[in-house]
Length: 561
Image (cartoon, rainbow, N blue to C red):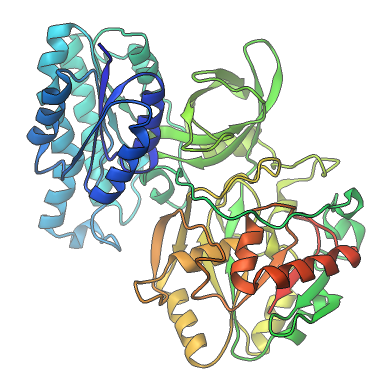
């Protein structure tokens, strides 16, 4: 008889990734989520691999129905993964003003429901003498993030309840030896060891983004969408920028600027310092204030082979998304990192062929660890190492990106002051970008972003007054276009975006784009086509190649008007 896993919050993100992994390992699945349509899509896809029962329901209101239907269908539940979560109102109020109705809702979903589901499945696990319970918590249950008191308190309560349940079931403290979390819990499950109640908690936590729990408290960065084939061309090696502009010229703004006009396909060749000449009073530049992390870690495989392990993003429960720079990574492969830290691959990240969900055996936060032992991610066209400052924009202030949003690198403080004095507005968003992996050209996956109320107001005001909204980089386009209401109007929002901007989807907010030059077949080229059309992008790139512009993060820039 096949083992059975019951997963709540299974329609997307981490829950869906775990369902994929367990289906590949021969498990039948009981999947629960509130979003019936998304759950049905996930179930239909997984049904090609295994037997799937979908139970769309609110876990806080019908735990008995969820567990009962699973047991009725399969006769057993071997693994229970409590992944469903409730954040509460948005924006989240301070505890002083948090309504008791909302607090009750958060506690019912995040604490009471997981324990109730455990109560419902434990008897049949005990009768068989084996089973596994995993409760997904968050660093918000450990760190006192202002404004996250309701959610964080619930996750702290769930963590403690998990420890108590583990002690009660095992009689000797945590039933997961050594206080192991989700990583070891999955491994234990695969080895059919005895019943344990485990938690993905701060024990060995990998940490989270320093701005607070949004990047570590929402479920994972895992959704992918098919996009049309992007523009293909041959990039001569001599057009690859190997070093920062300030090392080959007089400053970071010493780069060339190509300006292309959609209305008539006209192209001008100029210098970045001439940028104000192409903007006009009332325009609004929108920049991404994320800061780049030293996200490349030296690692060693069990056979002694040295590799690079690239950090990409943080997930709940001390999990992270990584890219092992090897051709043949394996499930549950363990890498040795500096300072006696170990990284274990748990499952592939959604549909990606290069990204993995992993856990670090680490005391402290992953951000601090990266600063101690990491280095900036770079690819083969960069012929030597540069400090992390070379990978920052002058306005970077919120750490979280694995790679630099390089479109804004050429800006200097002097240039920004000049633009403001000319009546050109400057607003900001945050989008923490993950690894790019130029060799694969996979569609973009989910990334955390925030468009604040002030930025949304300024975008609306600029448009109302006839100004253009000019995105500085593709990350800004993705954030702004993700922050729209049903009528396509800009609003304030934050969270994870899986939006893939294609020519079919188009854009609603962005009028123009300042960006670097993108590699052949890169998915960002489809975004350019969504703004300007395929024919214009083809003409512009032909001009850039003929004009010997430089590519990559230290290269020249393109203003698409």
